Image (cartoon, rainbow, N blue to C red; front, side, top):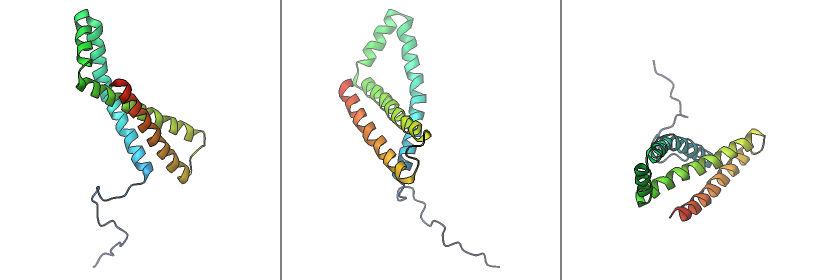
Length: 128
């Protein structure tokens, strides 16, 4: 017996060639920023604990935060926080019934990406 072939099945599952809508990219970035924040909290809590333990610990944390690598890490964590915050506000707005349509979702995703990019660039200028 021959099985029927479903002609609607995707043939190419190369993730680099699949075109995702902008809403998918916004959602994926929102999840990634949440994971970055979760991991970043551990780093920040360790630095806080060390800085509050003694004057020497505070001086060590202060010296570490002056390095370019630490500034980059802080910028990355704050960038994740900003993106997550802006995307979260979008979700709150959608919860009250605004932007729930397909067109509204696409517009909301574009606004989130643009506003986040502007805030992240301004944050980078402020940190450096």
